[in-house]
Length: 256
Image (cartoon, helix red, strand yellow):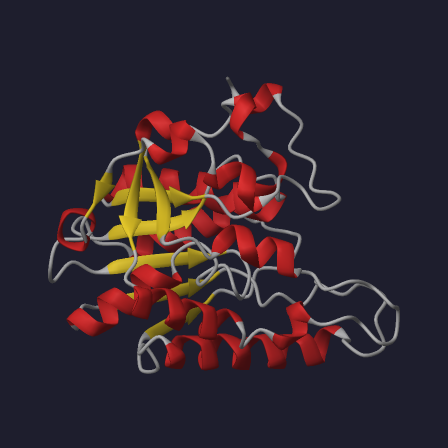
C-alpha cells in the first residue's frame, strides 16, 4: 500500500510492539551482516533531524561500527529546541544546550565519543522550509563512497520526511548510497496496512551487547524521557515507543 494513502498522524500510543514482533512479513525480511550493510572502511553519514534521531533507528549499528573502528559522521539537522513548546522547565535556549549534551553522552556510550559532528542549526519544526538549503549543505559534505542513513521519507514527522527528501536529492547528486529507517513509522503504521516498504528492507541483527549499548544511549536523552514538570506534558519518547525500537535488529530501507 502507498504510505501516502494511509494517515501518518502521530497520536496516542500507536501500534503495540507485540503486533510488530508477531508480524510474519517483518519476520521474513532478509537479515544481513554488518559487512554487507556497510563495507569495512566506508564512511557512514547519519543525518539526524533531531537529537536522538541518530540513536533511535541505528544506535546498534553505530556501536558495531565503533567497535570495528570505521568512520562515522553525524549531521545534526536541528538542535531539537522545539520539543517542549510553552515549557518553563525547558525553554528553547536550555533545550538546545541540553539536547546537544545528551547526544554527546549517547555517542560516547556507543563508543563514538570522538566522532565528527556537523551541526546545521536549521529550526526545529522548520526542516520542510529549509529542505533546499539542507540538500545543498549535504551535497557539500558527501562523497560518492559514503553511505547516508536518515529517517524514512514517510515517517510521519514533517522534519523526518523533509530530511529524507533532502538526503535523497543530495545522494542522487553526489553518488552516495542512501538508507532510510523508520522511527515514528512503527507508531502510525501497522502490519495489516502494508505501508512500510518491507519488500526493499533489510534487517541488521544486533548482538546482545550492541542492543544494551543502544539501550544505554537512549537513556541519555533525559529531556525526552521525563514528564515536563511545568506543563504536565507526557514524555516525548514514552516507554511504549522505546519498546518498539529496542528490537534485536534494526530495519533499513534501500532507496527506491
